[in-house]
Length: 303
Image 1 (cartoon, rainbow, N blue to C red):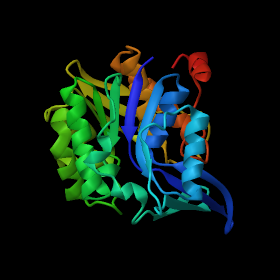
Image 2 (cartoon, rainbow, N blue to C red; image 1 turned 90 degrees about the vertical axis):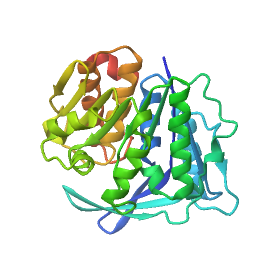
Image 3 (tube, one colour; image 1 turned 60 degrees about the horizontal axis):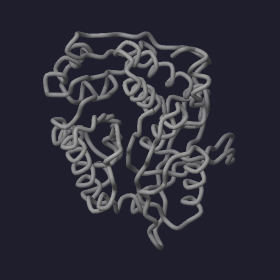
Image 4 (tube, one colour; image 1 turned 45 degrees about the horizontal axis):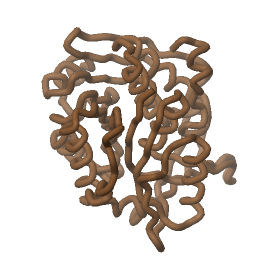
């Protein structure tokens, strides 16, 4: 099994139902993907900065329970860990409020990679949330992707646009700065439109592929997903396991499914199907990654 390295911000997540807190968990796009990778039997290392608060301890407990290496985590004395409050307004609508300004992870810099060994890493995964956090995180993002590519390590990038952190032009700049280092670019239909100006997903897919990645994936929600590489365009239908609880975490789960399938030598169609299946499993559960399947469950359905 492979070793996947990723980095980014973790946030404590409070769930509010009927006006009262109902649960607390850990979230963060790259961390969600690391959880998925580990549950599917691969090794995952996640790098970040955490505060010295109770939320940071919750993150560390989550990492330990999921078997994710904490070796690349730095604790910031007096720092704070970011927070999300998710309030269910209706069965289909969840409002999220982020409290991450000035978080420990916002202080990440390229120097955080000093001493981090990538010699035994088989895959590096990143998202555009990290460069959206500030100049230091952006420098880290660029150095990490460039360094992985220089070592011949495959790189996947999930655009993961957060408009409250970065506008459309900023997202395009973040992608343009690193796309030459990216092997697999993952985005949803709206992000593909933002990056290319094209409304048709297949046209956007081909335009993005022409910029250099070996593979581009465009996720279409309930309409499945498309992928393109030098063999052509591939499609998978969406998977329905249970009524969706909320869509957050679907893209992170898709990335974990895709990455592990590719590391296991699956063809592009198989990677698409596994990504779609993992996404469906996660959205059937209220947490961002709590519904992620184990390797045993994956083997049962041969995804």
